[in-house]
Length: 569
Ligand code: ATP
Ligand code: MG
Image 1: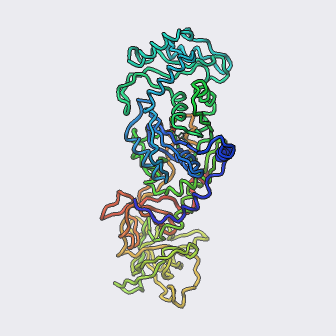
Image 2: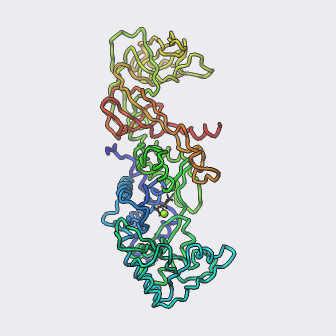
Image 3: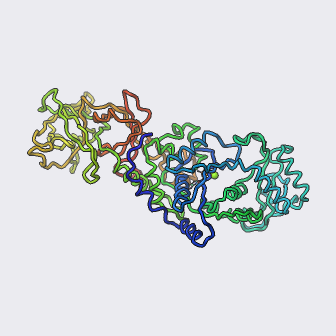
């Protein structure tokens, strides 16, 4: 994919994140607890990555980089049912696109299956684990509640030899799914329910996309995760807050197994974005049920969707930095993301003119058949970057339908009967006549122009209140433009309690404008190239474009207004 020069990279990547986790790492290096930093990003390959994952990726990779360490990419692929090789490839593509590289440090938790098993044998020999024959329902019953302690499983004191034999037979497929589990022997009266003899293995006679049919038992997350971290020599195991209550278990496994490497688990709060639903399970459902066009639908909060929409990795990293790393649960306003995106594209995207909903204007005193070429800089003075192109001007132009009003309210400074307006980079025109169709709709406006008022003319500085954009009709490029709003109409879609999230989908999340008109220079544009269409926002040329008709997505408008409008309704 073609990228414009990356002028903002230094800004977003330096200095590295300042936050409480960085402080812990710094202290550990200073005290000599560690001499190097090893972090990991451990996605479960059961869906595409979303912007929440981007935060974790950014945090783990940039922390390691800040201290000259490394960050591993670990596929947390211990769960055989939900995973798919397609997701593994998508995850790698997305991490790279975000600007991070794991080098040779790609790992798969499934490659540690034997080691997990050996650890279970060790726990059994230590008298710290047992094979339990209670059914899932009985286990739940025995577990107790927040206010009542649990009860001991009748299988808790099984002899070591018997446990070892049963474990081996479980592995080999002698028992049915769900008939037995291996459980850690910890404390059924612990106030922390996670410590009430949690399961470490369950029977699942299913194929695994990496390990094949070698295993009939699969390890539980809490058990596998800490051992994986230890195997890889992770120093700081960063995860999100819902694992805070699991930390004692993380530590118990590693202490009990006397692992030489005992990483420190540190939790931070998840990124949550207003009007945006994260959570791979629901996103997967939206894709499979056809509520969106796919994982890379430009309305999706997936990295693939954000990329297709035209967001830049620089903007996403800048958002992570701006939101910061804390332990408090906040819903981040979407305007944070759009502001980061505008900041980035402001210094990268050429300013061009495109009319999204065209209205024809005929300039009656402009010579028929004449086209003149006006110089137009690609960047405004305050950005100060070089480059310009020629923009044709002629007798017939298009303006936006809403830049004309026949019967305008006060303070409407755009075109109106008898009124004047400046055409951006060109002349002042005056509306002389309005032409309507049989249904009474305005189909054409006839104007005259003041030939002294273009750049360099004696009337260059003549003041009129409004300036509008336009494109010359005969040279313009017909294009499809897609505008987007958020997918959901509620601020916290992950928190929807009453009813289904489907009831809160925004019917206007995508608006297709099939006959937009763009200035001539855009005929040469390439897929993935980004522009600012003046007054309309930042756009990207999409891969749906054909030779006859380009397709552009709006990445962000120039101002945020949508959520505020919605609140007023
Ligand atoms: P989801 O809830 O979307 O299904 P997950 O946590 O189950 O996400 P994993 O693949 O297990 O997805 O997550 C990989 C890593 O990304 C984990 O370390 C997880 O804590 C982190 N992560 C997931 N969602 C967020 C988020 N919203 N903000 C920050 N980190 C996140
Ligand atoms: Mg998960």
